[in-house]
Length: 149
Image 1 (cartoon, rainbow, N blue to C red):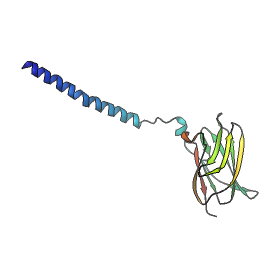
Image 2 (cartoon, one colour):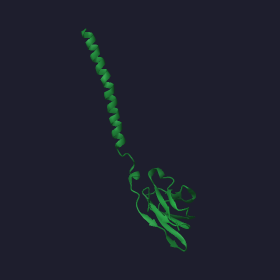
Image 3 (cartoon, rainbow, N blue to C red):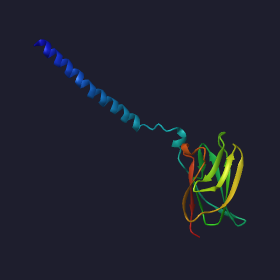
Image 4 (tube, one colour):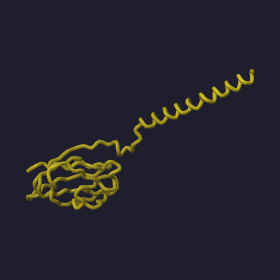
């Protein structure tokens, strides 16, 4: 009988190890899931807002592209012609500007230290996302707010 007792003690120990190991794995996954593992570029806040000013009958706003962010990150316009001036004063990466719902509203890649612009007709009143098409995953986005006339 001692052999049977010894066998069931081993079985009990082996059987209790699996749930313990599973609990430890779940705990480790839970802790890892709670940590903020996003790159620093994704953590930077979106800051600033600007309302376009009218220059020669065209609404105009200047965006700065730097550190995978647009500044200001929110621009407000009214229906009509809008000129967006993009100044890349970042650290070397090129940036562009596009309103994805209106793909013709874009500025091509702009090298560090360069300035480019585009003029387009603002869409219907609403909120529209604009992006740097090559840095969207890094959170380089903003909001175009079109107010009613």
